[in-house]
Image (tube, rainbow, N blue to C red; front, side, top):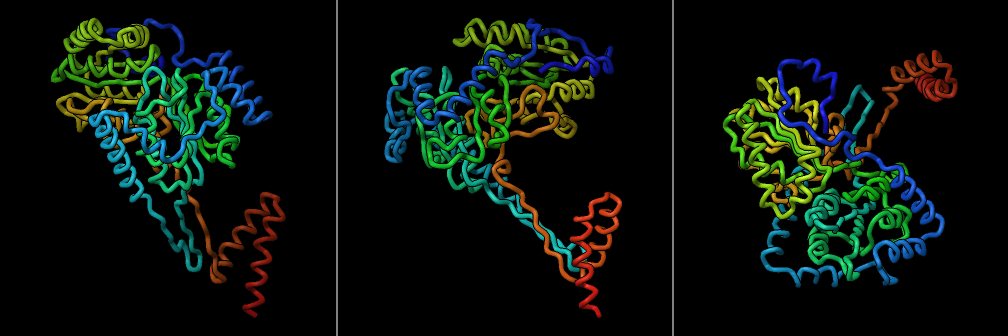
Length: 442
């Protein structure tokens, strides 16, 4: 998440960099060793099948069991060991995420229209048949991940959703991750992590048939596996380190802004956090507040380096400049804390998801409380792409129905175009119909 030099040139004199990132390297840079390792693993698993999956599971995760799948009863009982407070929070997050997905689905409607007399066209939304969801569970289990991937897929009408999560050191899966997956409605859960999990789902080694799509976040190896599997299966998106950006003015509370910047920096040491503000005083206050809060933050070993190496603060002379700067960054998450949030909402164009007002925070979406999906484009991807939603699991399939009366106009035009292109067989498909039409007229 960096500014484009040429775009900064166009804004020369209208902004000032207060804090710049210390790291002088691309964010989420692809490591050639990761690419090579993933390529070798995928090739081996495709060639040797489930035996290779088992070997990688034992070698990389210490998983000794011959079976990866969990029974429905075992999955449903996973919440029994959780506190009632955590269960209630997960249930709330699951339901809100599904509610937003259901509402989104209701606005994706089939349609049919007669473009010309006798020429009927239309579109149907048809769900994918099989989806594989990866639910990470490293230092931070990210419990709402299952809601965003598996849960939304089920709302879309996907017939079968498989989910994989890596084992803990004792060989068992995190019970909160399992309960979240149960609430999401997964059809089959597997204790299997990393590249081997994605490959097993993509190659059909776990559940008879390959999945049509793989979704979900993961580490650099998981992201690279998705990249290399794309084409064999669909993927949601290629996401890098989590990002946050804030537009704030003199009305914002520096402590709140600082907390929200650190809230996403906590995801990883390469997670960018950016503030664009029209208030020089707020810029200074936020920098100071970040340092104060890092002194007491339990995850300062992660958030601190992320802020140092990838954090930035930029002063903009006015609202228009702030918008231009932020649209250039195109952040994954964008918070607006100003006296005129609606102005920014109307005019900003490039972001994964926007959080309006001081009472909104990215963490609400991260944990499922806002209902919106937290699988979003990073590294400038918001300039051209949107995040995961119920629509991603639906294929908008078109159809045409042409009657005899519509034939002369369509066939004549196709003959003319095809003749110019030199595509005689295309021309013939129109000609045989035109001739049949004329015969019936005689």
